[in-house]
Image (cartoon, rainbow, N blue to C red; front, side, top):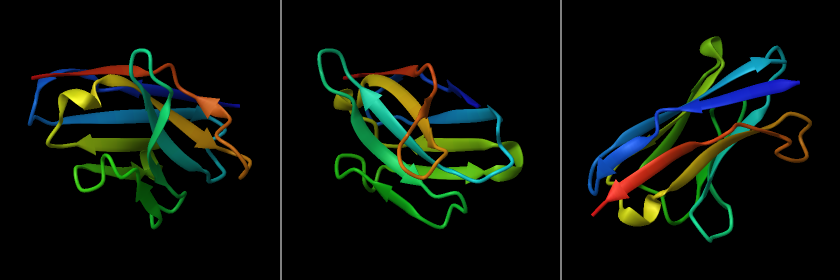
Length: 118
């Protein structure tokens, strides 16, 4: 079992920055990839960014590429999402998810709200 807890969300003006954290507990001895997703009101959940266990592999959705950076500190069992140049369309609940068995994101956090005002 892996427990994930997101934090760092809030209200920010367009053009501003936020840094989200995803802290893992439970089964953290083995490595696994982590991703961030988001879901805006009345919209489907969408993929935002992914990072491999080692941190050497990352990829992003086109909508955030160049503005968001995913990173991790395995010593702290924490994955981060640095979000810069935020836009109102980035407003959503942001979730982190862990791919523990190598086949799917099967552990999810409770989400953290990000609101970007224009």
